[in-house]
Structure formats: structure tokens, C-alpha cells
Image 1: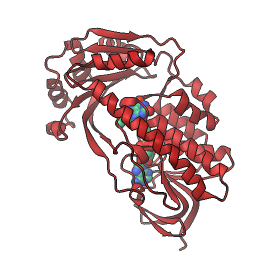
Image 2 (image 1 turned 120 degrees about the vertical axis):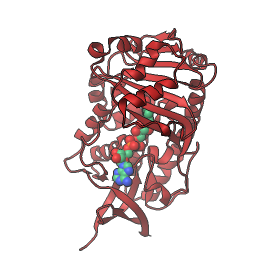
Image 3 (image 1 turned 90 degrees about the horizontal axis):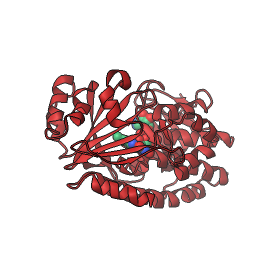
Image 4 (image 1 turned 90 degrees about the vertical axis):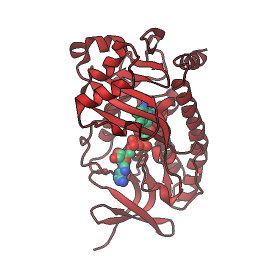
Length: 379
Ligand SMILES: Cc1cc2nc3c(=O)[nH]c(=O)nc-3n(C[C@H](O)[C@H](O)[C@H](O)COP(=O)(O)OP(=O)(O)OC[C@H]3O[C@@H](n4cnc5c(N)ncnc54)[C@H](O)[C@@H]3O)c2cc1C
């Protein structure tokens, strides 16, 4: 049986990989996208993303999707509220509708991109297990089902634990020292009115003692909350997160001296709390130009979420790589070199900002350093 060949194979149907496929498509170039998930609805996408004018929104314009994006924006989502551990509101900023960072539900954004691609572009249920060069810039890619294909251009858009990254770099993500636990509150105005009132309409922070709550209201009326701590990597591993009651109680112990209203953001949640350790690649991660393969998004520059840039950068990378390929027909290596130089500069700067954001949020004086940082942006 002959091995299938794809001139452009994108591994990963996240926001970055889909933006690349879309920008290529609007320029008359088709790519094959491979994703391990069984289908587009295999996993809820959860969470709101603020999409920045100069990065994520510019990428959506290149993808000819900006107008449709505006229709799906969550009104009021750019409001910011910052509290201390005693639940005193120390900073409040309304959403006047004029900000350059409108919020959208991550699932809505992914659907927008998926719906804009020709049927069959994404090969669901395709878990990539590895890839290796076959010469002349081509790669053979192996899948968990035992099949393989070759690619003229192989793009690793497969996120934090990329199977393509090892072709270019030895770097592996390291734990940042921050552990999140994700908590959901469904139909919040009716079922959790006090939590809904506390969090308000946009982004919410309650911070102190190197820990806190980061939360926001979603467009479906639910609340999405991260309880977050600066903690050793194994600190939460003693909690049995398959036991809802016990895990809520144990997690709440980490906030024992916090205001009761804030502790309810743990004890009153719906369903199971989900732990998420935050990892990052070294700031300034880069690689030598290697024929026929490149990376984008988290595969290239996984960073902590404290600059709110990861998804924006992934889409920017996708749009930039698409434009570089269009600008260099027949000149693949020139296109990749043109794509990678600004990518390294841009992502190095954002990784640094993310690391600074982490320090501004998790410290002994919190929430003041975050308030100072936000006020300095406004000024
Ligand atoms: C808690 C948290 C909050 C965040 N908040 C924000 C925010 O507010 N704003 C923001 O801009 N960013 C935020 N981010 C970062 C953002 O989520 C990521 O940077 C962004 O999703 C990266 O997109 P991507 O396309 O590179 O990768 P991903 O979205 O991770 O997509 C990778 C895709 O590859 C697929 N895949 C993985 N491995 C394989 C394989 N072996 N074979 C085939 N397919 C594979 C996956 O199924 C997935 O579909 C946050 C991150 C976290 C953890």
C-alpha cells in the first residue's frame, strides 16, 4: 500500500493550526489538518479569550473572519474587577465598549474557524505519535493507528506537548510554580446569584498571599473560575479530584483565612474541580532553520497565561505563516525563514510579559502590584 502524501500537513486543529489552514484557503491553497480528538465536539472548549486588536484580531482579518468575529463578541466582557482576600473591591473598570480587547467564547471562536474551512480539511481521530525526516525536506509522520503519511511542509500546531517540536529543539515545558484548579458555576444568575454578583460581568481577580481566584462570566451565563496557588508541583496531588465534595473541602483549606464569599467560589461549584498545572517553555525559545518543518502557537512558545497572549499569538503565527507561504510560491525555505525571525522576536517579548504578569499576580503584596500594572497600561 502506498503512503499518502500531503504538500502541507498541519498537526493540531487548535486556534493556531485552524487560522493557518483558513489563511491558506482564502489564498487558494489547501492543507490537511490532523487532530487527535474524535470529532469537533469531543471536548468542551470552555473559557473566554480576549482577542487583541494588533494580534488576534489582525489574524482574523487576514482570515477574512473579522466581521463574523465581531458578531460573536461577549458584550461587557472587557470589564475588570480586582479584590483582596477580604473581598474588598480595590479596582473596578467598566467595559465602555471602546476597548481593543473584546472577549469571545473559545468554543465560538474555534467554531468560526472550523466552519470556514472546506468539509474534510480536519482529519479527526488522527493522533500523531512521531515524525522523522526522509530527505529533501520531507517528513514521514506516524499515527497511533499504525498508518503513516509524508509531508512536503510539516507544521507542528499541536500545543504544549508537541510531537513535532523534537524535530527542531530539545526544549520541554517546565512547571511555572503555579497550579490552577478549574471550577464551573452553571446558570449562575439563577443558581449561584451571590457568586454571580461578586464576579460581575467581566474579568475578576481576588488576590493575596501568593494565591487567588481568577474568574469571568461566560456568554452562556455560567461562571468560569480558576482557584490558583503558587505551590510546589506535587502540592495538589494529595487531593482526590474524582471526589467532588472532598476535593472542594480540601482545596478550600488553602483559602482558610479568606472571606467566606470568596471561599464559596470553591465550595459551591458545580461538578468536579479540575486541576491544571501551568507549564511554560523557556522564554526566547527558538530553533535553527530546518528544512520542511516549523512550529506555531503553544508548540513554539508555550507560556503562562498571565499576559493573555497565548491564543492571540497562536492565531498571529498561523496568519503570518500562511501569508509567508503565499508570498513565496515555490520558495518554501525562504517563506519559513521570513516567518520564523519575527515569530522569535514576538514570542520572546510576550513570554517575558507573561512571566512579569505571573509575578504581579502571585506575591505577598497582592493585589496591589497587579493594580499598579493595569493602571500603568491605562496611563
Ligand atoms: C488556564 C489557561 C488560560 C488561558 N487564557 C488565555 C487567555 O485569556 N488569552 C489567550 O490569548 N490565551 C490564553 N491561554 C493560552 C491559550 O489557551 C493557548 O496559548 C492557545 O490555545 C494555543 O493554541 P494552539 O493552537 O497553539 O494550541 P492548542 O489550542 O493547544 O491546540 C493544539 C491542538 O493539537 C491537538 N493535538 C495535540 N497533540 C496532538 C497529537 N499528538 N496528534 C494530533 N493532534 C494533537 C489538540 O487536540 C489540539 O486540538 C490560556 C491557557 C490556559 C492553560
